[in-house]
Image 1 (cartoon, rainbow, N blue to C red):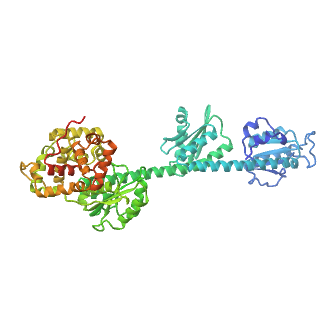
Image 2: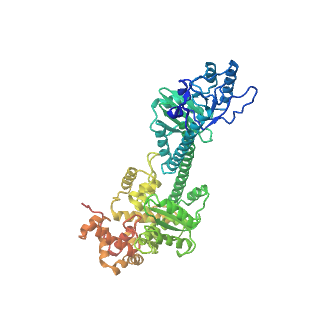
Image 3: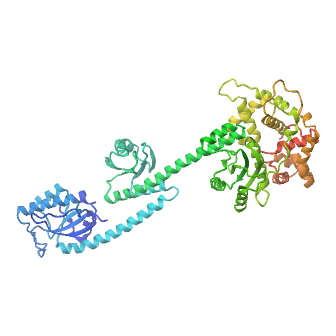
Length: 640
């Protein structure tokens, strides 16, 4: 809306302040309307409650409506007339009048000017009569009001657009800072600056701290303070106690239009800040739940069923006693969306975990409805894989809860198969486990193999003990360097632990055959009901695997390659001999690395097992080759 100062600067209106000093004192007063009136007669009760921001046009106290000759000074009548006019100004001041224009005069009596100063009502003069002055003022105020409404609507639309953008709060505060030609800061209930643009001068917050604390504590809704050479405006936003506050700083006082703009912006700032606060709390809750779910999965993978159940009960959930493990591979960056989709598909009955090792994997532990993967969830996941490009699903077999680790490996191998099928979904094809074929001598061999690790006692309490080192070794054999993410330790810590384990076991963990033997020993220990007492028998692994059953198992693993493409069996042997390194395999076979990778992917598809990515079936395959060929796979050799 227009202001008194803006109206006096329009030459066609010929409107002037009665006192020149009033231009500075009252120039920013808003004017919403102009009304022609008369001085109240003695004893008349004049209504002033509807005069807020109204510019009142009054004739000189003793001027008749026809007497508008600007060349003659108006006759103000007696001293009582002037006194009554001064009293009228006091009433108008209480009604919030924008100002009083005295028409048909070029000046006012000093007594009336003094009364105006006391009441805080600006007096203005116009040489024309009241009616003529109203005729000129009304369309100007009307046009200015319409222009101000359009500008206000544009500003509101701009603020609403900015506040809805992804970085809406910062964008709105930056826009507001440009509008006031100063700095804007959002201060939280605790007194911490949450956002500031541009950065506030260093001394502002220190000097304004007492006033900010009063506004935060709701002792006052706002405060305007002089921080010479600057001016600060502090405003409470929201209804909480304590509340957040807006701090606005500029070099000049805040005129009425800017104060109105700030008040409008404050509501949007509060709403967006509350939305972001709620989102941040929601993310914290989601992160806590995700970490709890990950901890539950970690406990299940270690076989700590009771610990996993305690965590899930704390979250108000239950784990299925009989489960099927699925791995859903999502396109990059879309895991949260797929997590919500999977939760909807399962109706909240499944335990969904974001894989800590592979950032595109979701691990789903769902109640098993049948031995075959043909239930509603299986069908829904197949549909998900078929309809969404870049999505693959691997399903394990039905397992008991204490066999979750085995179920995960099954799902991982099935996922490798799914990547090569049109349906992009596959179920694990089960084969007999080598640990079931080693007989009663398997566990003593495993105990002897890992004896120094199992009996290890750290010298310092803060050092990892035997259980922690064993868990680290199992995780590394499954995920290699990804074990650092899975165990939530630094990669340097992982390397140090592996060197320590190598020293305890007296072996080279970089050797693939050694890895296969240790992984087999760990699997035997996991499946044992309890450790045997006494000194284990001195039995060699080659003796344990030199049985018809073991040879049949090995033949079942390798015959699909021999029957399909003999060159792939040669490729597999070369890859195992090269310590599972593609670059060395390619050099041995005189192939490029991409060609060697392509062959290995073909091997994965035929065997329906993951080889290049961990957890890998490479350990079973190296044992299979060892069973059929004796020691055809050598110990680790130096690879240039």
